[in-house]
Amino acid sequence: MLRKGATYEVLLSRHRLSSVENGHRPAIETEILFRGIHGRLELDLRGKDKTQAGRVAPAFYSLAGEAVPIPDRFLPVMRAATKAVNCRGCSHTHYLRKPVSRPMNASGSFATDSAVGGASLVATQSSEV
Image: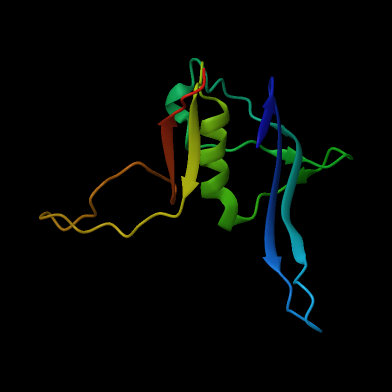
């Protein structure tokens, strides 16, 4: 995801190797899963609406100005990525990873962690400034 000012751009793709034929090396096949352009988010996630970070994703529009819905399976990742690109004064790296199953605690509810709508956002300090 790329944010420039209040506009968001995103490209989600899948890459895999093709099958091997005639002893040749497999080719890399790329499939575009979702492309969002001209995304807008009317919240200030770096200021007064900071508590909403990780819970919202931008709305994307086609070149004709029509809304392009984000597929439900990508919403958790989009929310986590939106939080990452709005990290003020960021000098660390953000990684997205699959959530792990959480054990139940004594009260019968799931233990809490840093999961953001199904995708965990991990930030690590970068050695570069």
